[in-house]
View 1 (cartoon, rainbow, N blue to C red):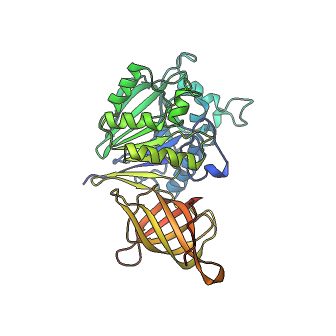
View 2: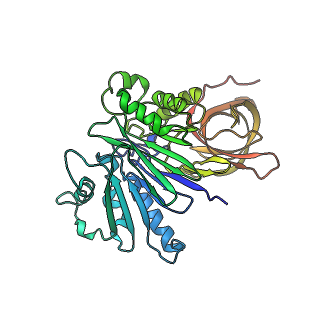
View 3: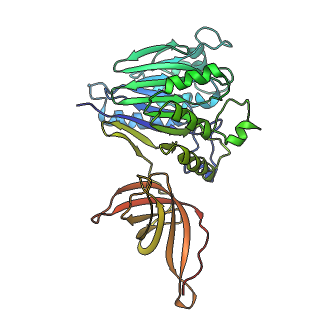
Length: 403
């Protein structure tokens, strides 16, 4: 029976890490993804600051379980798209690089600025004096390097890898990984407008189960103040997804100045044009199986919650696109979010309006109306109900008090 594959997002922000509170919901670490193929082969896509958390996760997992073959070492294939800092700056903080039992196989292109062994030079430069206090000689894991170019193809056990050039300053590669369980295309840091590269990306993405695409800017920014900066928009991602018959589009490489609400807006606009759209979020995972692609979002627990029972009216959209409005019970509430019991099953990352009954003056009932985004959905404790976790994102328009 075919095993599943799993894709995990460890860093989703572009250009520079962010720590602003209004970026927390989607995450502030720069690009890093982990793909585990059905045969257990692990791929790491880029080494932005998100790779630090991945390293901690891998060490904990292998220290506890090993790799199932009597060897506790980590073995992974590292696909680097290009050498800009936001895609390599996590290298010195990835602890498995410093442990001798581990093995890493690096892939990227030969830079015209560095010449032969570009990839090795870039990796070692991250630990060069006076920029980092630990010398590269302390990086004791086994390392191999392979320089590739756009159009190259190779196989790693049961996974076939294909590359294509992207339009980005100083070059960038897109990667496609075809597994028995499904296909992923990783196309970050690209700007439309070069016909040969635009065509190559569409060919690479054709029929993919998941396309991860640079959506750093709005369409308006891309056409004006950010033109020529080497990035793209949600609208261009939608065009490629449609033309290439992609099943799922993931908006990626969020701008450091884009708040969670801005990304919400990009996602909402993209879903109106291409319903199978997601916005990349740290901790988000996509599972490939015979039943299709399953998406799981990280649980949000930013504040203390209190057990209670409120009545509320909830408006939103279900998994299958049906608009619903129903009475619900709020069973768990914090300043940041709530846990709802609903008969409807809302779509992850969709927006809800939650109107909670509250005591008003003169014992009249009024409504506390809030907008929320869905971050979790599971079968509820009671029959025919769903447990829905939401994060409040902005107050909705207040409703008039009821008599």
